[in-house]
Length: 225
Image (cartoon, rainbow, N blue to C red; front, side, top):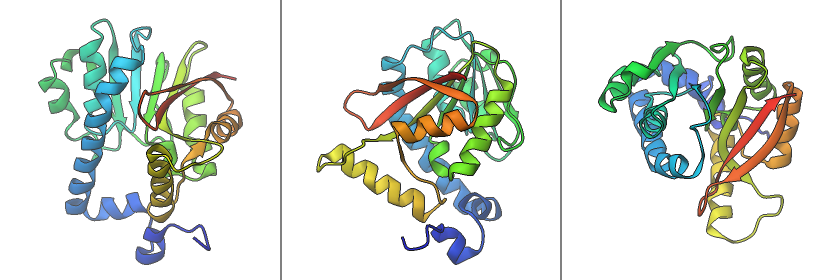
């Protein structure tokens, strides 16, 4: 809390994701937890947000592909890709095949700090930006900006912190998540205005924020600036 330094880096000398890469047994537990978080969120997202307006989408940092599989299963005319580190997408082909969408989606290995697949209609980043500090977040978003075509969208699926916190359960969950992001990967939860500033620094423009009913999660939608 005093330094703003990641607790993982302070204890182990490396960041959270570097630590997981070096400790595959713990990475399995982490990936399973992230998949469960996605499972609980997916139904709400698919039923609330209109993904059918996009012909092709890329889930950046999409892990085992559970979110993209659900989106494609609910939107027959959409094609997709799951983009993540090789270890992240190891289970994606099976997940996509089990969901019956393997023919409409591919798993692509890569590093979003270097580049992302080009010319998708929508770039989904679920629980990605909150893992990173501002400079790293702008780097990821800038790579998305470079890959976009003129009408592409970036969809950040994140907890959006209110400008004023109160004692509601939603605010409490956001506050706990914010401390977790600081302690573990060194990131943070952000307000809509803070997301607007990040997006603008990456050459993007925030268009709208769609809150998921009964949840602290929102879809922050941006276009090329």
